[in-house]
Image 1 (cartoon, rainbow, N blue to C red):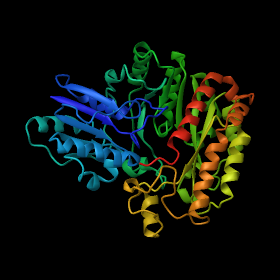
Image 2 (tube, helix red, strand yellow):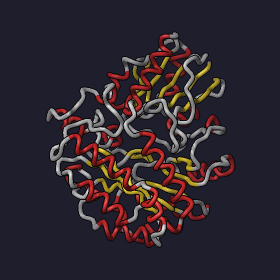
Image 3 (spheres, rainbow, N blue to C red):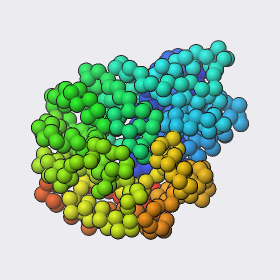
Length: 430
């Protein structure tokens, strides 16, 4: 049969920072090659609305749900069977069931093959569920259908899935409940070698793990193997790892050039972000700068202790420390997370379902802040994003004499891609 794998974008528009969708690569790897398969990713290309296929498979996040439902409706009205999965489907399966013939909840490694068999036999189920993370040791991430697509020079690889932390705002904790599994290191290394052989655009490997240190012992083993490859790579993890300066040094020696750190905010405790409680941020930053690792600082702004003055404080903190990138993210209540449930119980949500509301715009407030007005909240977020990404501030950070200067081409390429995305996404309708 013919299968179309689709990855919608928020507003059907293009993105400058799109990387390969690993979730779809897993399903492609699990699909018998007797079937004809195509992939369309709306971040880099149009999704055709007239595909002649037997099955449409759509992966979606909460911010792309509205667009996904539009695409699903189009194909269901043509009599084509539609499957939906992804984090939004795992968080809100009852809603997604209204828009798809079958919904996948959780990881697909144990359920996709069964569904295909059921589909061919004409006896599919409405929901296929895998709540506990499966063994992913031997998962094949099949990228063959991505080969000629215009994705980023940054290529994603997964070492582990899940995270041991259960932060109030995070979808990962809400779906995986603190569970974590990792792949065999030899398989990860083999995959990376293959990427650089087959993918001419590949320059940097990005480990998409939500916290690459979820199993510290295995992370060290991975870093020692990466050291032999002499490649550049990036990752994300929790700040508590900086207690081990020897580990940060090993990462640098192994080729790590960038790490996303969840600073989240200056006062952290109400987020249930245990990993950040007792750390000297200034000291941590110095350790990464010393080892020439670019720091991508990620914030979640808008918690109840934040006032309208917090934006200037966080912006100045970022400027002072000359972070490679700073993500000034408005706290967004994702359905299925503890944050959403709390704000709903407190009657503070501004929309019944912001992800489906015609009046909601990307970057806007979805709830009533505690210590500022909605207008002050939205203006503060926008100010941080625009100010930090002005040309003069990008170039000032480049010449900091530390990690930014050590990786000038990476610094400039990624910063200007990020700057474009700040303006491209500003206020767009979902």
